[in-house]
Image (cartoon, rainbow, N blue to C red; front, side, top):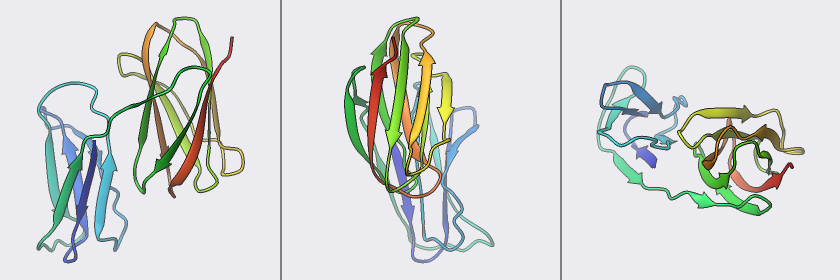
Length: 171
């Protein structure tokens, strides 16, 4: 899901809590920016709470909030994919892998430095890579621990724009 909060009256802060009250995602505090946003992948069903507040010494007023459901993009091992990352966003891809299979994941962008993480079929983050730059991209190789649907998360510590992804069979 992608959550967005905008105001002309205050610096908004948006937080997502699970049913136990644990903070699981929040928008960044970008000083004077009048918009807060984040993208989060819900890995388990349940009740979630979205909190709107203001950053710093307070303030308040009218605001606009949106919540958008994002569908996972499918990619097969051996294929290439294209995506566009929005500011503060995360793109999600999924593929089917087999236990013991080695895959190599390459994400490149001329617009931003990609951060890539791979999550197992049960939602555990297996590996994260952000050692690239706009010239080289991010490269991750891993032997898959089990058979099932894996999820790739593509984000950026700063910047946004178009990117290319390639999922390579390493065997």
